[in-house]
Length: 313
Image 1: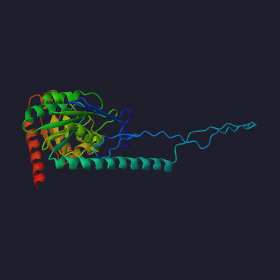
Image 2: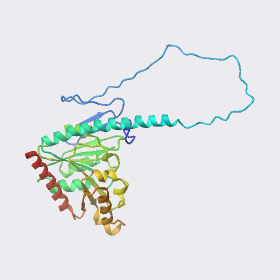
Image 3: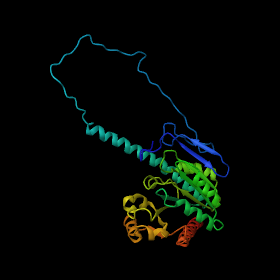
């Protein structure tokens, strides 16, 4: 189980290659039977250990042959755990969280080196559920697919729906189903890349599980995080979820064609985002009308250009 958010559960992770239909399943990434990779091309596998410990081979039944009678009543109230015990429990939780994040960060650095070595631009798209990440990817693939080859890793708890949409739009896709997990992790992305096999110099779009909390903490090895916020949500989201907006390089305000029909102050939202992250850039767009898509495409070209310059140095 993930100490950070409590997710992980029992369902494990399923990776489906939409091109071949092949599936790979594993135990939960934080469970007792955690999969591990040997790094030599062998798939990850897990070991389940069932240990039974007995201090001895018999039970002790202590029966007292006399009764105790008390002439007064005791009111036994359950007292809270001592402060020291609670502090110890908290310390264990913090240590476990640090260990989980440290392990993920190490895997993310390996992903980043892999991307850099192949001059691949990897972006981590994050948002609340329904903000429009998949629609944005569909439109981007159709408009820029011949200019920059795109490969997509889709993250959802269940279904192949989004990956099927991406495939129909014209890009190879791998679906990562996290079960009860609420975010993608670097190792899941690595396994997705093993199935996806993106081309040299391509763009890998990682559409994270819809969630504005935990994906902010888990580095996947991406070049940048792009947070998508629709005008159907509250404009104070940057202040409510500061870690996500602080971690993002770009904020996309989506579905702006709905502005006449909703109460959403775009200027106020962008000011709040800059309050959290002074360096964040904002692009207003609508995948339905096409408004603002040119700015998004120009940003992609610029980031891809910077990547090529870094590789040339």
